[in-house]
Length: 118
Image (cartoon, rainbow, N blue to C red; front, side, top):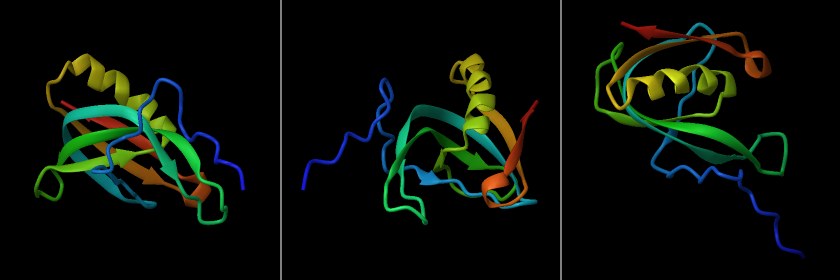
């Protein structure tokens, strides 16, 4: 049996395993204060495929504002969400940013809206 191909995205290190995948279902909303973030990659193991997939991801150190609790480490792999929040986090230059994520749709057709709270 040959060696497995490298599972990586050039220029993006694999995120620390401390980040837990953020999952939102249709109709769910989450408001959080993001204190820091890290762009990277993560390995996904699809349920219906034996082949792992590498995806771009963002790790967030954040505290939920809608359900107060401790600061947690979240991982997001939804590319449209990453594309929407990265410019806001970059512009904040390390200052906390309040975000609200809303999920619409089901499974492979899940869409999101992202609001930056003032």
